[in-house]
Length: 348
Picture 1 (cartoon, helix red, strand yellow):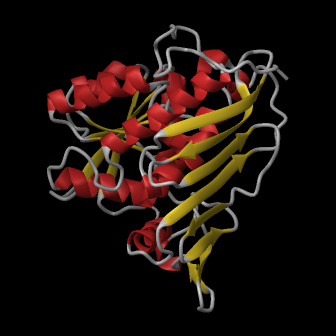
Picture 2 (cartoon, rainbow, N blue to C red):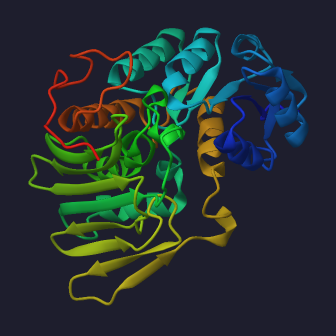
């Protein structure tokens, strides 16, 4: 281990934790020193799989391990507030999976806790750290397509998912919006910031979670955003940004694109493709690299995934849920920005 090595702890042992850890162990300046689960057996199996020295059967032991610099929280999002809060209070820096929390109130509590303890905190919005997405944003910010007029993005899975699946389970924050819709909403807000007005419709399951949701976002500039998510139909996961002097199209996988096409008025289309040197398009190494860069620099948040931006996305997700009538166990009227007033919708 060198002075540049950042030591990681992994909190949870599911599929996303495994994918992130697989990317992490390939980075020469990262060391995974411990993993924790609510089950000692699960933690031990994960540790053996990735050659991790310490396996804890409870979260507290991981949070108190002073050999850990950063904890990656990969629990279901209903547990993000508790898991990330435990680690921040114990002095660990935290990278927390998306959606950041169940609602805005929990997100604000985590941000306040991080700032109180002077710890680094970042949502694991890997899309924001993707080199090609960063190139797209730079082009838009530089005026390549003029003033942005509209943004469109979708993310849907075909399913079908049974009522017992986590995506249908209200106790686990199920539904399309928080798990999938966070991507198109975050993409729109990456380019335009927080919307000034929101309209939304959804189809709800018998359990009360959204099977699919569509929202129209409005900005004071006159720009509009159309976002859609679904757990009952596989979509193209496409995105398009239209400006006053051109358009950028991402035909597939907008949150980890292979490429995009820039159309400028009066010019030939320009294709931008991912650099093979950046690794596989589904790699999460870029968010890990950004966390380690910031921690070494003594920063408490990332300019690529700023905490105020994360809070703004959570405000939008809360507002959409209010409009479509999705509330999770333990939430009360007034929990979200519109006081729980919801549109009347017919459950599926």
